[in-house]
Image (tube, rainbow, N blue to C red; front, side, top):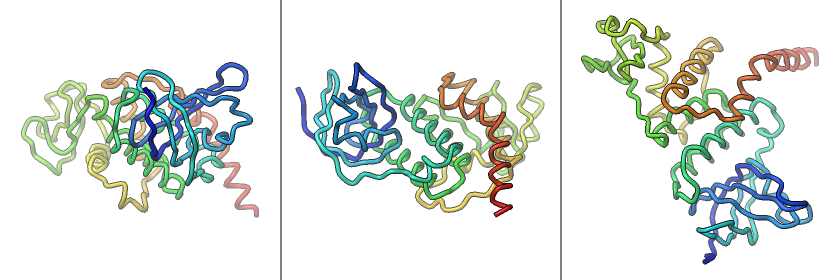
Length: 262
């Protein structure tokens, strides 16, 4: 049975279906992720609102046992900055796919919806997309059943130490207990410190982030280890981000040289 509903929504992706129809995966605030059917998409008035990473208020008909339908829309938000910058777009697409992977379809999760929406808005404002992605990755671990403690030593529970991480003990080691794991991660102590901060940071109050390139690389490498060890998902947008490190710096340098010459 279909039910009518008005809800905020974020388009995750769309794909072709038959000749001119589309299936559109949309994360709704009130009814979770749903697959929507849009007939004759190229000629439909809905075409502007079914593009990936579009935020919009939708009037929908929800079907709990199959495809849902969009009746109308209003208050559309297009993230122009995100869509115009390859790097920001890559990271925004990744966090959207991560949200998609973290919960089942049709599962209500207004907090996750708000978290994704706020992350995209901050990226749109030009705040560091790499660090925003790291924060999103860490806070969303709980959706995969993972909760890691970067705040204290797993043995003595001391805080404020130069921690390292142990995958053997699933937590941090202080200097007095480094010897407990010969294969500890040998992290820069700033990495577990920042991850502890990322768990608690309030995205609503986040205005500026400034981390060195070297530290961001260390964060990226360790979070990749966490996801490989504990989560085990391999998303296409993440593979694309990884490929950016091979040729993306060339694009960035070219863009910077062009700006310097103007």
